[in-house]
Image (cartoon, rainbow, N blue to C red):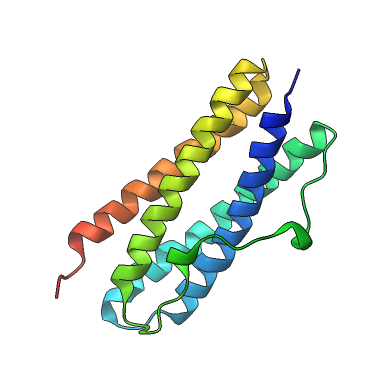
Length: 151
């Protein structure tokens, strides 16, 4: 039996994924400079992956007889991922992505634990699948941080 905690975490993750799509897309558009190109390309790719995560989460909510939330349920929380005033400040975007991915990994670990406790193997599978993607994104951006020129 799925619990309210599972559906609450699915809903939270769904909203977070859509906010991440918006912020990754915006940063991929606004960043400037020679050092920004690889980060922009990665963000563009990640937009599609994050959108697919939202689809998986929304579909799981539907399977559990819940509806994914609409925009009126949205409250922006990713302040560290807002586009920088200085569009060449790639480092701040890298740091924002790392923070967002860390928060996402924490959410998916919590979802995995809640799904295990609720004996909900399908949601466990969704959580593990998305967690693996989030860990890969985090690793990639940790590499960008290491390689990025320090002023």
